[in-house]
Length: 123
Image 1 (cartoon, rainbow, N blue to C red):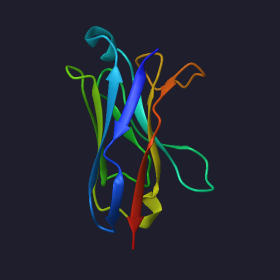
Image 2: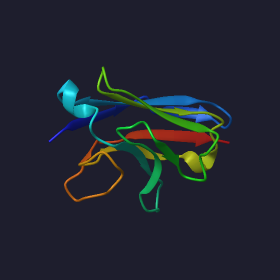
Image 3: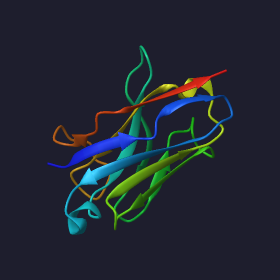
């Protein structure tokens, strides 16, 4: 099991930026083997995939964040990042990182999740 700890959330005004971080407790040679992703859950809504990155650095984004968010990973530091620009109130949610059990984005019940970090965007 890998422990994931998110940070970097906060409150910003529309048009602002935030960078989220997710620190993973894993052996350096293992972390790089997994696909990881950012999810979010807004009040009263289901959890949705925001952005993902495979072990081979292939990225994918939800249509709602394309061109505004960038997902990156630093395998040497066991870190995952989400750069969020031009934020709008619809981005308000709790953001979670998720570690998949393989190199690709294939969800399973045994995936690891962080505890989440709150992002609030005011108009």
